Image 1 (cartoon, helix red, strand yellow):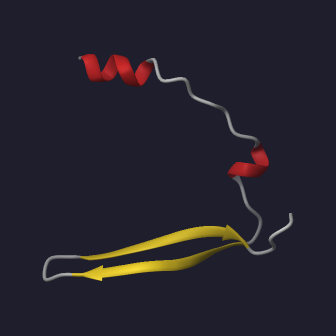
Image 2 (cartoon, helix red, strand yellow):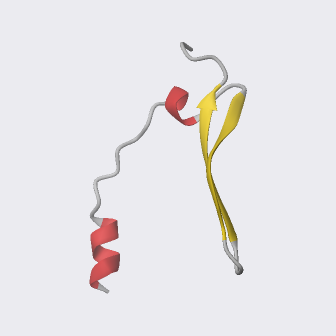
Length: 52
């Protein structure tokens, strides 16, 4: 019950529309880890053109 209250009281900051949606995004693979049970892959999404 206390955890739920902490989440509700968290001060959310609204992001600008340009920071949320990207034009022509691309995925860059950063790291892959494999075990007998799973394969975990870490990616970052970035804009195709860096100054826009």
